[in-house]
Length: 272
Image (tube, rainbow, N blue to C red; front, top):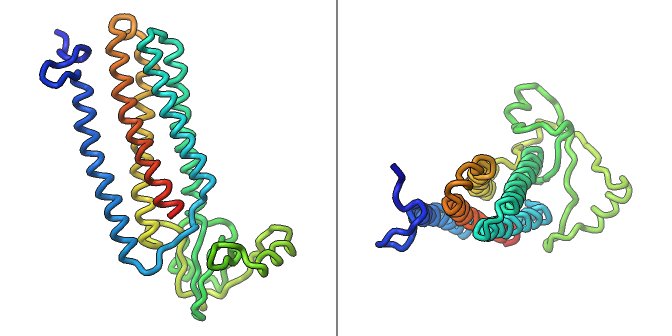
């Protein structure tokens, strides 16, 4: 027995079942991400000091173009299915999947950079950001004290002015060391705060990891669905090509939503 309205549209909605389902699902997704964006706005306006310039804008820009490209290729896949060009459609679908995993790979590298980037505050009230020798993950002051270490080797980032430009002193120091950051010892007894850029570091990174992590899960889920269509739709195409086309259309609608969320995330988290 065939499931009704998998290909032909329903009389009451004018849409086939899967398309009705995806629109209902996307409505719930809008509410989910809408709530998260609203929380971000409330946290930001409620904090007198909000971090800026801590994310890699070129990497974020690259990932934006990767997702925009994937939106184009998934549309090209659907168009070729409509033209009954199954081979070319699979080619475009494969590019879409590659773009998805490229996005996730870059995001993983970006996450790793935050896990090894630290903020250190000392008893004199000074706060520095940089790297600890050996690039440890999730090192805390409690762990350092537990090891009974007397000092940590810390390489501070160049000092920036109010406009985000590197100061003349920092440029001179960088030139003197040929671009290499010198690791200098900091007494553990002078440290009052030590944290990498993890969610517990600040509300900014709590929001950053929550929203981008959830978005990354959506990217992974969409990529796996399209991979299933790519590798297991040959038999269905020979018998029900319109059903395969409908599946790609539904997956494409979800994918466009994922791309749209990132287009909002990029300027909010990286630029503003």
